[in-house]
Image (tube, rainbow, N blue to C red):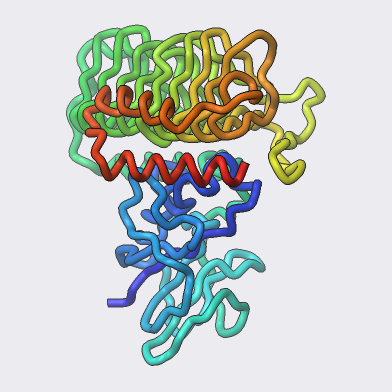
Length: 388
């Protein structure tokens, strides 16, 4: 069987706030992680992720990370900055996988060796979304989510929960073992709503497809639409066109739109993101290293892993909150909050303080705080502070 390996992008500011925090291959583009999308496209499990800067990172990575180097064939190397649609690819005699004019994958026959990215050899087109940075996970959401949810329509599922209100074809409600209270509204006119095993949906929630909620997530009320949420998230209020990577907490009212929410993020009551400039112009991100032109009209906030906001936090369009930052204090936070900032970005949280909080938080989602996880978080803290 041909081996699959994924090549990480360089940790540039465009991948904030996840560069140096977790492998890009483990971020969600639509429902599925980029790694999972490659696995579906080439019908092979990922053997490893290649990226020196990503070694030892990622709390939920399922493929080991190893240094970038030569790869002996037979193998396929996929670019982690590309999210395949998942449609199987017929490789034939192809030596490269291309999307438009960009090479996004390399086929290495038996007896040959791959030494790095190149643009040589016969090209095979592959469908998907080219990712320029974290903000393009929002573009991938818009382009891939409806089809991702539609894939579940053939699955065995429970009947439409008793007492639900369904707008559109009831077949678009896909409950795979969810508990849904009476009075929940399902609007499936624009796409299916998929609820994985162990999901709880409380009375007073309106779910608009395409929408996916992962295992163990609780939807506690409000208007939630066109988003990927889970696993093990707690969400209430208004959420639109956003990606929750997992284990995040937004248990209160407040609007989160066109945002990416990392693992273990906690949003205080009333936290609200702006996702559109008053000028209706394209959104720019201000990060360490300069200004990034996203080319998008809608970008809310990119929340790094373990970030936290105080109650009533108001976030400007195109805000980036780095890993471990605690945002609180008077006034609007800056558009870039550095790693482990304490407040708006003046002083930094200590390593001991960060580990102490993580030790309290993880067991709340039945995740043990093991010595191995402590070591991982210690390395994460050191790398993030060094890069800052």
